[in-house]
Length: 217
Image (cartoon, rainbow, N blue to C red; front, side):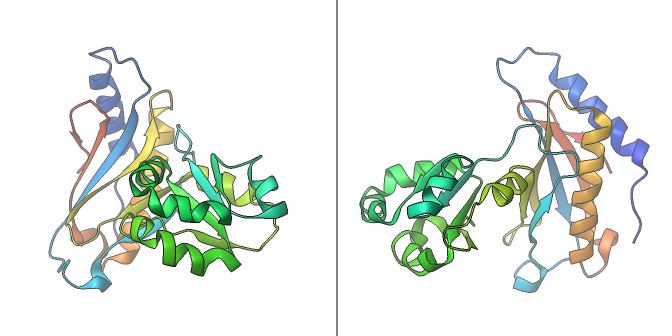
């Protein structure tokens, strides 16, 4: 497995950040990585990438996390999560699909107390499933703050059946070196999932939200 030289990645990130600063933005842009695969049959489920990767230097803008819990677990979750849903709200969420879709799109990850998983799947799975956001189970009544904090620095790398896919690797305000380290972590994981590793990656690009793409390789 052949890895890209670190200075090559750093240079690409520096160029992408410089290009984004040519026009002033009124918001903090994320830095995104685009990976283009080659010689891979994406119709085969085994070849599809679906990985959650903890970025060693963080996302720059933390991921948003929602929790499904009840009782003591819900009280603890409210101190850590961005939004908390309790079982008596599930029916209303199911009826108001448009509102729940909006919330699901705003959240990056969900956690749920294990006993609630079946109910969530039955009532809300139609919204969460296609978005790849079915919750991860946690013990009932537990403090989810540790898991929430870990997810805040995690990115989902999901190709579905496409050869080109994207993920966040940082944000403006981070150093090019830190973003490059995040990129290396993502590429290493993706390569480990490909039959021929680095040889299955055709091109890699990095860009800010509104900026032009810069070729890494």
